Amino acid sequence: MQYIVLDMEWNQPWPGSAAARRPLPSPLRGEIIQIGAVRVTEDQKVLDEFSVLVRPKYFRRLNSRVGKLTGIKESRLQSEGISFPQAIARFRAWCAEPSIFLTWGFDDVNVMRENLEIHSMNAEWTAAWYNAQMIFNAQTDGSSNQKSLQKAMEIMNIRSTRPAHDALGDAFHTALICSKLDLKKGINQYGSALRQHEDGTNSDEIPGCLQRRVYRDYKEKSDAVSAMEGSENLCPVCGAQMRMASRWYRQQSGRMSARVECPEHGNMVLRLRWIQLEEYNRLIRTVYEGDSEAAAAFEALTEKERPTRRRRRGKRGGTSRKKTPEPAGS
Ligand SMILES: [Zn+2]
Image 1 (cartoon, rainbow, N blue to C red):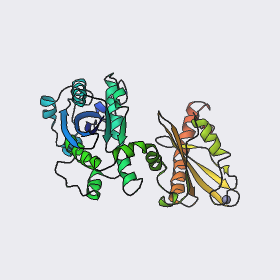
Image 2: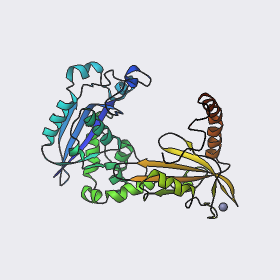
Image 3: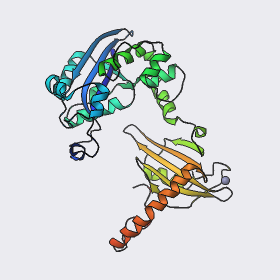
Image 4: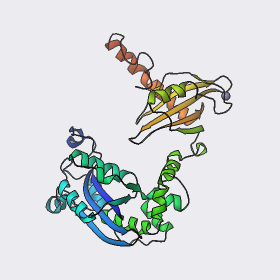
């Protein structure tokens, strides 16, 4: 058994560009253009290194921001880069044996899996993949925030010797951090580190927030939402049953808000965020004071949606799907 510490750089289309609008066979938030990796032995010795440039297929124009950040030039990708399937074959040949993958952050594994998917390639080998940040946090200050690689190196007294935002440089620095952690223990306790991270922020760290709770027991979003409207819709101040005082308003990435009312404490704003992952679901419920910034933002949202709804209703002859409160779980 060995550890492979990985880092990748990926290209993204310029927002609004033709490449950004072109339909793809499967979602791709970033196309990998560089893979850097460092082998760490089971007894945590930093061994050899791997690096490869990948010629992009879907987002061929190098985003100037990515170019600036990574120092990679489009011409170099064209001349030195190899195709993604070739790069993965070379990488896996270098790994040579079943490995535990470690990266700094949650993004890399998802980007890797999306890149494998779009090339119709097997992703099973990525199953044992851990975010080293979580292990670092659990074994240092126990915080749930995501620290930059730079910050973590400072905490561990590791001097930067490689360029940042170069896949191999970042992988090397991450490997140095990993070699100072108890990886075996970190991986054994990864589940609880992850939960701690997800439960994360305390309500008193969020302005105007009276209560923040994380639920994991709901299989279906619709069940979770009806519980939040009913039995779980309790006033964070006095615990009394609250009532829904508006319909749900949807926001980005699974967020929704509504006005709720306690008979004693008046109006508040209830926000839900449903996160559906392959492994499990999670619902984050937050309740905000009626005079908080979050409540003002909610009022602005309801104002903004009103005229649109009226117009739509007119056009569709009164059968707009927004006519009645949306069934929350759909
Ligand atoms: Zn109350």
